[in-house]
Image (cartoon, rainbow, N blue to C red):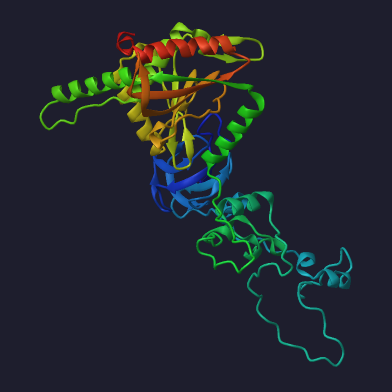
Length: 445
């Protein structure tokens, strides 16, 4: 028996999803746990797998569609099974409903037929043109005209269809609706191309403003906008900055990488560690020594975490994701380096699982590779703090009575003032500075 497949909840915070790609086509045999589609959620691209067996009889939403939880996306059943009733109720590929007699008549002509009256049996319904006036020529009946866009510029569409149009960059005023009274329905948007962007548009005339490029919000960008707005509106941020002598850290990193290269087998690519890998480990040690920074605020209490799970910000085309390195205080620097690289690679490929981006206790955001000297990061709730890291700068430094070439590293700690007081944040940075300027302690920790 045919069955409608609905979009399931693929992550704890998911409210809607975008069908990135279908891995099955109509007519394919489906088994339990077969991969049906990739669905982009607010956190990552998730795999939508089948819970049923059968044949994929119809795909109701094309790739690129934004779908609400519980919305029908496909129909499975037995080959050749009649699915017209299911397709009609799903809103995704059913034949267009025909307007009623009253809806088809122009507003000014509805008075020609009294309310509640019906055409006699066997006669044409009241959707035909009104009788011609006496003496007028009677034209032969014509075929129904193809759907046309609204002539008055109004968009007749539900909020959901309007939302689909915005996300796909479509101009709905030029779309011909096939629903009742010319209403635009979801299937009318299938196969339509986005409105021309500024790059493709004709140059603006002198004195006119050029049209902007339209980039519909991705699921991830929507989540970022929502969470960061919530963070800045509800979390009282304050900021503490330090400048660290990075020469000892640089020397240790170069020595470790040289030793790793020397011990690698012939033809084997040696592992490497970065400044960020050493910094992640240093932060973990500092959080153990100053646990008040490894905390979060709740309405009833402050939670001091006994685990050290550090969220590491990774830039992806759609924005920023924060995969979590678990139990960092218990891991060696080489293990941390390998795990961060692996998580970052899967983050850029949108292959992270939701649980790999949740329940961090502290965050690190490093923009040094982009040439940024210093910045203040936005806290990632419910965490209580985030460390913003700039680049290692080459500049003159004073050593004893001499000015010599050196390296400096600027960092800013953003704190939730409900959790972390100024003195607590300053103590954390003092411990972190000591670790970074005497980095063998990082290896011993």
